[in-house]
Structures are given as C-alpha cells and as structure tokens.
Length: 551
Image (cartoon, rainbow, N blue to C red; front, top):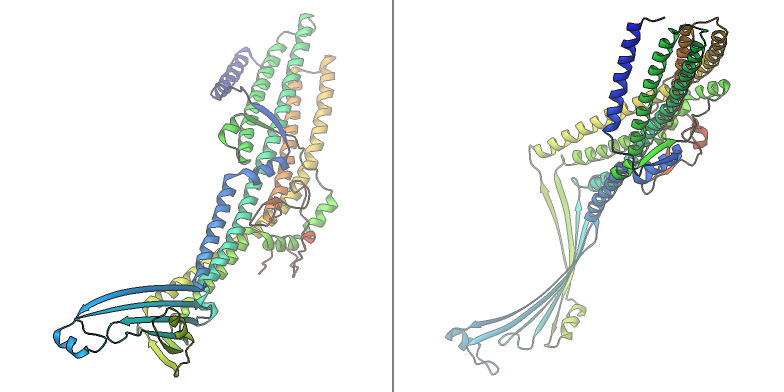
C-alpha cells in the first residue's frame, strides 16, 4: 500500500502531465474539416513518387544536365553560314586619271562601280579532332571604266585541318561531351537514389505511425482495465468487503494510465504529421489530413527460410552494387573524371596541325544576273592547292600541367568516394540481414511474453476477486502486461524496419528510370525480403563471410 502523501504527490504529477499535454493540443489548429484517411504503405509510397518536391527537384536536375549535354554535343554540329553583300562606290578622278582612261565609252571625271558578293560556308569539327570547311564565293564587279561589260568570279575551296599531336582522337576531343553524357546518367541514378531514400524514410515513419496507433490501443485498453478495477473495487468497498484504502492505489493507477493514453495520443498526432510530410503533401493539405496506417506489421518468415536468406549474403551484396543509385552515380562520375584526366594529359603535347586546301576559280563575263551562276560552272583553268604545318608549344606549359594535376586529384577523390560508398552499402546489407535475424527472434520471444503476462493477469484478477491477492500485485502484473505488449510492438517495428533497410540497401524499392518512377514490379516491396535471383543477380565469388569486397 502507498501512503496518502505519496498518493497525492503521484496524483499531482500526473495532473501536471495532463495539463502540459492538453496545452500542447490547444496550440494545434482546431480539427475543423480534418479528414481521417486509412492508408496503406503502398498508398503512401505512390504519393511520395508522385508528389514529393525533392523528386521534382532531382528530375529538374536531370533536365538541366541534359541541357548541358546538348551544349557539349553542339560543338560537333555542322555549321552553315551565308553572307551577301552589295556596294555602290562613286570615286572622283583627277584630270590626269580622266585623260588616261578616256575612250569612246568613257569621257567623264567620276568612276562608278558596283561590287556584289555572296559567300556560302559549311564547316564541321569531327570528334576525331579533324575539321573540314567548304567555301563557295561568287563576286560580281561592274564599273564604267574597266568592267563595263561586267565580270563574275567564283571561288570554290575545301580546307582540311588534321591535328597530329594535341587535340587528336575521340577520347580527347569529345571528352567534355562524354562527361556530359555520363553526368546525365549519374543524375538519373541520383534520382533513383533519392526516391529510395524518401521511400525508406516514409516506410520508417509509416511503421512508427502503426506502432504509435498500437501503443495507443494498448494505453486505452490499460486505462479501460484500470477504470474497471476501480469500479469493481469501489463496489466492494461500499459493500464493506475490502478496505477503502485500496481505492487510493487504483485511483493513482487510473490517473497514470490516463496520462499514458494522452501522451500516446500525442505520439499518434506527431507520427501522422510526419507521414503526411513524407508523402509530399503541401501544408494546407497536411492541416486537413490525418493518415491512419491500415496495414499490419509484416509477418515474420519461418526460421529455416530466414537461415536460407542469410546464406545468400554475397548475392545480396552483388544485387546492391548493381542497383544502388549512389554507387552507380559515383562509378559514373569516376569514369567521367578519368576521361577528363586523359584529355588534360593530352594538352601537355605540342600543337602540330597539318592543313590542306584545294579548290578552283572560275570567270564569266556579262552583266546579266545568270552570268553569276554561270561563273560557278565555268571550266577552271587549273586547280588551287596548298598545304601547311603549324607548330606551337609553350616551353613551361604550366596551364596544361595545372589542369592535369587538378583532373588527377579530382579523379582520386572520386575513386575514394566510390570506395567509401561501396563499403557503406555492403555494411548496410550486413546490418539489415542481422537486423532481420535478431528482430525475428525478438518477435518470437515477445509474443511468448505477452501470452504469459496475459495469463498471469487473468489469474491475479481471479485471486483478487476471491480475496487472495492485493491491489499492488494486480497493478504490478498489469504493468508487466503493458510492458510486454509494448515490447512486442517494438519487435514488430524492428522487423519491419529491417525489411525496409534491406530494400533500401539493395535498391529494390523502385524500378530504375530517368523518365518516370514506379514501385518495383515485385509485389509487397515493404513486407518481403527481395530475392536477388529474381533480379538476375548472382555473386561471381562466394566469400562465405558477412562482408565481401566486390569490384
């Protein structure tokens, strides 16, 4: 039995807890227009993939990187250029010049000329470093002195530039484009990883919501039992069958159970807010939305099946490394940086270019417009050709050396980052598998504990009813039952979280795609262990331990 002083102190502390929790509720908006929704974990997952702003942000990053890729590819586009010009020039002649050119057709003091030109140019840089340019130019000249009849001159030329040392080869010239293409793939992998991260977070919060709901049920049932005890004992007290002092213990017990239930209600509200936030809902929707987890905790698999899963740890590791977006993007960026390092090393070489050109010129007299066209097809008196070698080299070449040092350092950083991510992924796989094993064992033990505690409580109530037990014993065993029920819920949560971690570690939540994200084609992704063989993955080397290095 507890003293009256202890009873009053206990009641006062419980009342303060009740007031504090009530004030926290008063600070929340009124629940007007709030809709309670029963949702499954798949409903929540689909909402994440469809609405979460971080996924929309990452999709925009993919589009941004695709835009940069187009810019890099644009360096190798064929370039067309057209230029048309026309000039009319009037120049005064000196007396001497006028007398020198005087003839039967000219006797003035002013030279008037008309000069027109049209140039067509086609140029392209190839990914090998070779560049080609073709030019067609037609000039038309008329004046009142030397070209009264008009002259039309055409020039056709083809120029070819071949780098012999620096800027030679696809791996050098197209390195920036290749890196941009790789970055688009890396961004798509980042998108998949972001989706997996958000789904794993949502799964954790969903199962915690379900746990808070079950803990609230436990607290409410405990409160109901405490109230029933108090009512029954009060009846016995009024009948003078037991001492009135027993009421104080039961009143304190009921107050404590009520406070526990109130705190459990607040935990449900907080968990609901978090799940709604994880689903990507906006603030106005969250204020009107109270999700309730309608799924049950995943069923624990049989012990033989769990032992068989544990033996496939190598396959799970291989599956993780073949699908994890963070690892794939790190590998992709490492490959990009190595390509850029190779290109930077090429800049240490001298610049040695061979330039070749060939073409011909044509001439057609006449003032008609078609004479301009005829000039292009007029038989050329002979070809034009030329060749040149251009050599340039800075003796110190510190710019290229600095760029190479920077590129090599970045490549080394990428390599170390990739190795660290690989190590973390393999550790997550081991942790998830160990978590499954221990959570499975905990579920079995807590289930037995709940059954034993319930039987003990039933027996103690019967003993108290016939006058063979005390109130303290009844309340103590009641506490044991509540503790066992809470432990059972926690073990079920641990098992569900281990399943989610396994799905996250092996990237089997979603189907990889840069366009649209969807849940994995394999059903019940949040409630089952992924089968690496169904994904077509088998480890090449079985190390037989809980940790293997896969290259």
